[in-house]
Image (cartoon, rainbow, N blue to C red; front, side, top):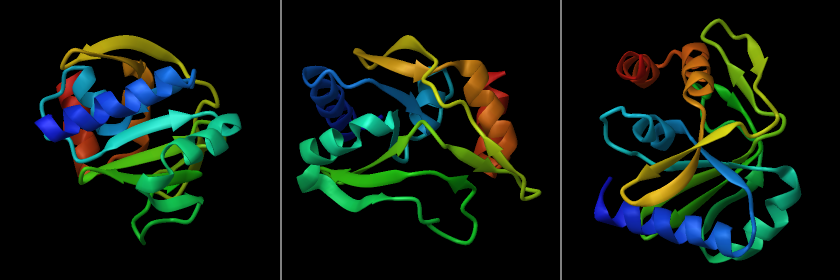
Length: 156
């Protein structure tokens, strides 16, 4: 992680803690927290639907794309409700843990768990609730993008 990514992560984690908001780390950051060695492209977090309005208020000056479930491109393999932030140039994706679907390479739409199932990790001195390694690998197997296959190899 870069110094700026670490600073932004600390800011977000502290904001969530100060406001008693539950979240879990997923995506590339979770992969790194579980031991993979690769660059961090963005910070991916999952929250409960009941907390969306509070999160929106807390980060309103950083929102680049408000809460929606629109696909972000023709290769999008996610059917999720999310908002995008940019904090000090760092991209942050916050999505809803309920109704989170992954689209496999074959086009199958697969519902993921609607609860947070985390384990505590410490990354760069920051304590984080991270999606369990088994669940992370399972989702990466469904997506099977090039980066996911590399991550699976490093995590196995």
